[in-house]
Length: 555
Ligand code: GLC
Image 1 (tube, protein in one colour):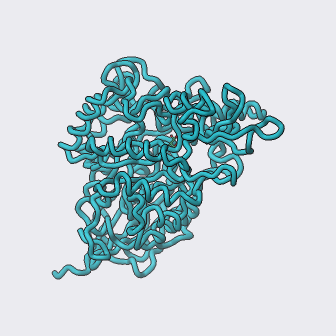
Image 2: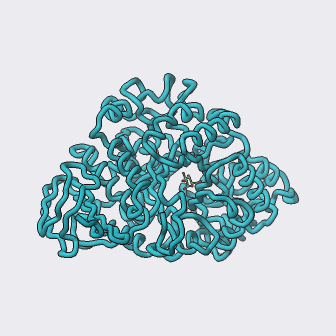
Image 3: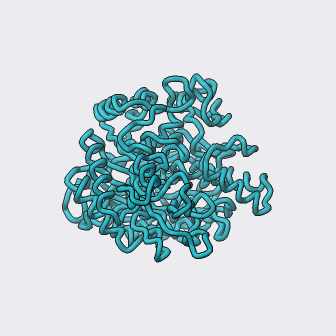
């Protein structure tokens, strides 16, 4: 497959990534926590879906304050997940099925139980002291700056010795690493190479936009040295290897994305940004106060990113992950039109330009979980924020309404394999309860049904592998101001795909602009196949389809 510059597309441009949250995917030993052997037992399932890469959320030793995003040893597998031998087996077995494993690289911070931090806090002269960010108290003895932690409260905690504060942009058990220290960087690069040598296919980089922080200047994300640091990391570790690297960057803009992922930048393969996600949040209270869904705003964001990265850089495409609500609940209709809207969302996303990411369970249309009591939640962010909201005088029920819409536990309930107890995830007691709808929404039922959401995902994944126009075609959007329809085309040489989607539960009639009135073959659809696009078309609730026009064909 050749791109516009005549060079071959990279392998990670025509593949689809599947994200596994190991804790919730498959439990092989009945302790209620998913594990590596559980994942190995489901590799045939992933191969059948056709995905080429698995991103594993962190599997390293950890006190699990933030479910593994607080690492206490980068080179040991958390015992609840298995052993290094299990990991090697996973890499080998996955490779045999054409699947690469990418690891979650959490290097903005460690756990407070990491030996570096234990040593660093033991004395101000520890050789690891400067691996972290310490500051003396403000003149009044309070926090050095006003910086707030993402999980609520100050980003500074006074250490036990009472002399200095350490920085933590997340929980106080996740002290920030000091990337200005070359010795720290050398340790991280050594560790990354150790994993690369074990045969992994790359890294997902947790909050990578924060490593260039300069707290004294109030800078956290997107610091002035950030790209220099990523280039150094590239040079010292994965740069000479043909791997996939994806940087999580909440602060990314279309122009900074070109820095992270530009062809000649020697940084990352692609950037994982959230501008489309935060359209759903309140300006003041953020995700805890969801806004009504606004398709026009969503399209504006999607179009901007598709257009800005048309010639250089690379997008990752996703609706959900382990920090976000379930896609069908957020952008579709998880009650009346769950199947139709889940397929519609997949169609829209997977035919855009970029590498699609499927979050576990999305491919069977798993939904948000309707927890009613704070005792059912497990996520540290949700629990902290609940406490802070209550302290600020808000009613628990109001907060829970927000958490039900946007809380991170929505994505973390057990994978629903079957109608068995706990969705077949475990024979024990799961660490977080399964969604009761596993009785009907589960893998077993999906595989038995040719018209399932799963079958639709499988088709989309296959299309990307076989169609250069899906991978490389130029994107163009239409009807930007239409309140319920999303329409775009992708063009490569003589081929053009036109994608039409209805985001509403109503029958909708739409006038198509002249340049996309055409006919061709049906590439995919969630109702009847569509071959012809006339002036006015009428769309069923959440209908979505793609027509492939082939001007080069001679009859
Ligand atoms: C990222 C992870 C999230 C984690 C945070 C701190 O945003 O996706 O789960 O809590 O970083 O590591």
